[in-house]
Length: 360
Image 1 (spheres, rainbow, N blue to C red):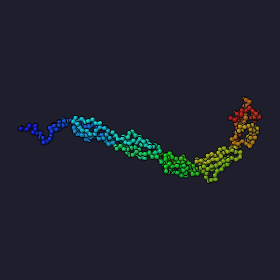
Image 2 (cartoon, rainbow, N blue to C red):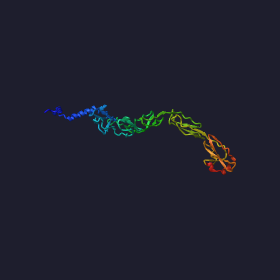
Image 3 (cartoon, helix red, strand yellow):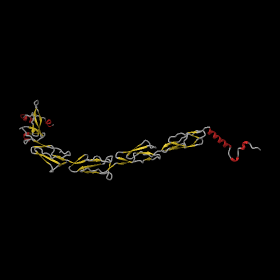
């Protein structure tokens, strides 16, 4: 029997199905017909391998997130289908998140987000300094670099002691050092004057405020007042804080301080003078002295001392009552009020004067 022609090319020993042959021919037909996949979708922060402008059916691509980003949802591997259209891609690449760093003890953290590749910035409160960097960046691995700093206390070394000075009060806060706003107080050696503030403070920069100076100050010998005397230390030179005392002879009164001191300006704190007493020219008169009626010739028979005062009675021409006028001894001069008339003295002594008005 003659073998059919179609059977002659099919050899069962090869085990190749005619269906497979037909399918392969179909794929070749589709490929030759131009059913290729286009360049894949560009996803933010992702890369595609291999990346070409077109792909044949059956070829694969793999999406991966760039360093610093992690995948969320969707597939990573895709195969170009016979339709020439890539499947819908739901893959998303999101930034890594670094640990929370929003609290810095004794300082402030400034930030917008903790995600890669953002940075955060650090500042310390006054009296503290950054031990570390002023900023850190969230890395691809989701860690801060450099490490988060700490705010350390500002300290000052022991304050230098000025020449001719001593530390009056100094209490270090830690060891032999001081913290921000700690103070130290100085005093000068005897007869040295201090210029500047005796108290210094540890600043936020780790140093002390301006130190005072102790200088030697000399004062001239004080002059003896007219009609008086002065006493001061028996020394060849009178220095800061040395003292002098003044006094007056009989019938003279000291005007000004009895004791004065050599000041840091090189001058005495005061120079008093001696004022003369006054002789009373009125032979007979009743006056008010220290709120009492007295006879002036008896009260001041030895004269009136400088600065003392009395009130004379004067007659009111329009009324029957009287009024008073003050008279004061001023360095040997005593002026009697013009309104005073000796002939009216007896009348005014008995008088109708209003004492409450006089005493005001």
